[in-house]
Image 1 (cartoon, rainbow, N blue to C red):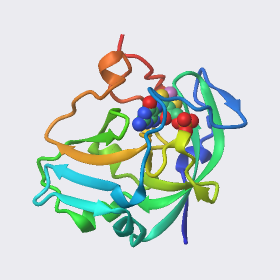
Image 2 (tube, helix red, strand yellow; image 1 turned 90 degrees about the horizontal axis):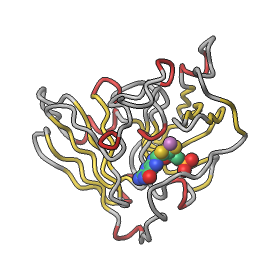
Image 3 (tube, rainbow, N blue to C red; image 1 turned 30 degrees about the vertical axis):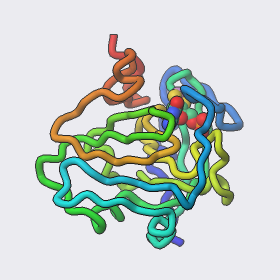
Image 4 (tube, rainbow, N blue to C red; image 1 turned 120 degrees about the horizontal axis):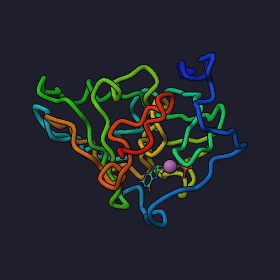
Length: 196
Ligand SMILES: Nc1nc2c(c(=O)[nH]1)N[C@H]1C(S)=C(S)[C@@H](COP(=O)(O)O)O[C@H]1N2
Ligand SMILES: [Mo]
């Protein structure tokens, strides 16, 4: 399996300013994990694409798997080293839909009603994957079962859990936390925590 180690793990300033290391992921979420039957699961890819697609769990299992090792930085100041995820790389999406040149940003839609926005150049990056395994096992419900996005270069509120929709947008628009005062981008090395 292809293995990617995020370039953030090799930074000389590996721990972003104002963060401290913890030895595990701390569960954070706006609600309890949603109940889910995989046979009913669907992933919708829509918005600024020529033809929207809807994937079943089987379709997702057919995509080429990839392993990602990446540090995880939460805006509430904890960071976790070398978290190991498996899933599919975002470039797989380009094989499934034709993305219009008007697409400038992505909104991730989750089963708990959560949303988060990511500019397209941060979304289509070498170390961004949709993960279905954490340390070799299906992602536990609290950590985002069945599918979550991992964007190592941004604070982890951008790494949406329970993903059910990928919307390509003509302009950047705030998601759940971005509407409530979190920074629109969220670069940990620039301490882009809040928008005020
Ligand atoms: N769907 C969804 N994704 C989410 C959240 C959420 O509330 N709902 N919280 C975010 C925040 S603030 C953090 S720090 C991480 C926490 O991931 P963990 O619970 O696996 O540690 O998930 C992010 N993704
Ligand atoms: Mo967070």
